[in-house]
Length: 376
Ligand SMILES: [Zn+2]
Image 1: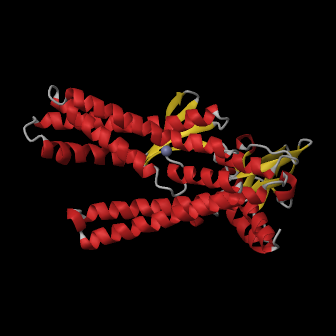
Image 2: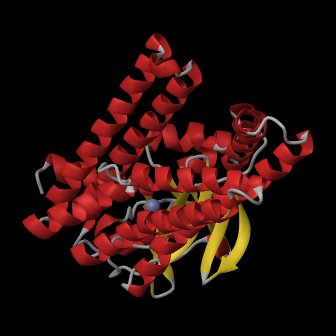
Image 3: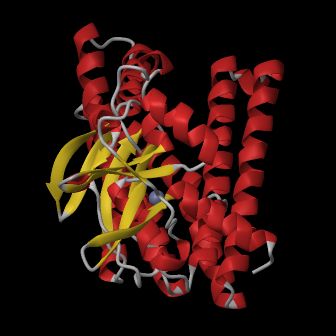
């Protein structure tokens, strides 16, 4: 996920804030300070609604962080390293560098988040009970936080992958059937089904307005459904990729016919004189001094067509020092994981100091398509 601010490292995990987080932070603060608190406590001074609204919002996001941290720490204790936690519009997401290899590990890791939210919810219930007759603003804040943490736990326990409940569901299927791929297939299909139900429910709310719900709730529900459906399909594709790449090495999936081009060629010359004719999609940019960088179609797509005449390939190539390097015998799956982890799209394969080929996401996709068409 791009467009995220780095908040720093805690517990050896990188914390990031996606820009959509600010939208939801403002939305929740406004909702609390304008609607929720004034409705239940009409005699507070105006400033108090906003102070309590902002503190409540911040504590809500701290609760989301705690939820994600529970996943990460339990995961790490079971040998699944977590690279980063990103907060965004729908809450938090932990980026694991690999999937669990045992059903039990996945069950513990997936269950830890909702369990943590339930515990936090319980603590806020206690705080509410203790402050109810003494400090009203704190009691109001604790009440809403208890409610939202329990809601977060319940929402996450919906058995559609990649929600926590879907992961729990998959780990149980996996345990019973012993078949990881089949379990993922069922859990992601259920995840897509849940997504469609949310979209349908959202549309019904917009048109029928049952139980006094407004069109905004319907739109929001449909939006979450759309997001879930997308996430479920993406998870399924990812598992298929992993399955298909298992057992192949870098030298088997790389493209070895990337021609060498000089760095001062313009993009227009390259496209007209080379790409259209040969159909090649990867190039090694080299001068007399050796390889300077790598160029793929994505680099070209990144600049507008009217600048092609005045842009040289050295300006848009990925320079050699920005590239991560693969060995020919490295397994293809670990290369894909490395690409995901470092958010890069291509890796040169290097043997005895020379580049012998290039692995790009496109070339991996082509490799997988050919293999699946041949039924291999
Ligand atoms: Zn979770």
